[in-house]
Length: 227
Image 1 (cartoon, rainbow, N blue to C red):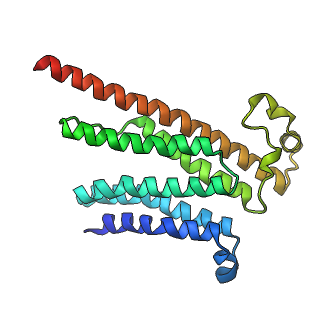
Image 2: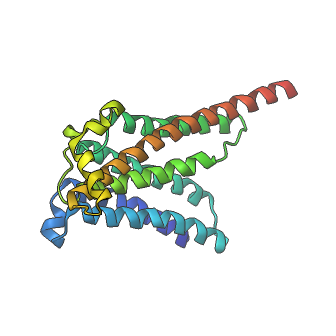
Image 3: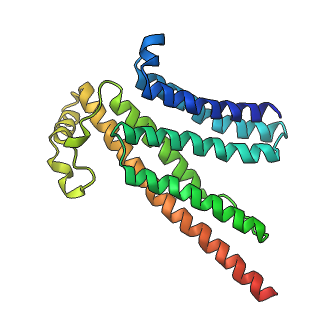
């Protein structure tokens, strides 16, 4: 155990705390703070710690096998918990969250199979884009709900053809053009950014999964030829 690993463990501890804050009235009763605001603070601290612990480990030459194991586990737990809660709050579509989380299970299984065959699956640049997109999605959707849940049922955002017919969206863009944004307009834009980031997350999740499988089967084929 070292300081970077303790920071990573702290990020894991933040996961149930985030869930409790979003699903119970503890934030209002104990701290007098809006639950979504406190959840945004908790999530941002955890996300920033993800950057800090890795840099600290490399700077202090404390990169360890335990750290390499805990870091992705902490990331997956944090994102998965946040996305599942957002589904429960009607702020994220369940199908997108199933794709994102399902991809993580599949890649974890593939890594195990690859390791048993002596193949190392290095992290891809698309994985970083996916992670950042997920963070943007979570924070944006929490911002959208901070002062009252956005009326998701009135948004046709799952159907692009109906996008511009949503009254709240038309009003928000009209107010943006007039530089007279209201708090509800900010919620609408937060919701739009969040849903857009979720689409980026889904696309990069599927595309990076394809990249992992392609690399794995290519390595197996090369190994078979060399034998």
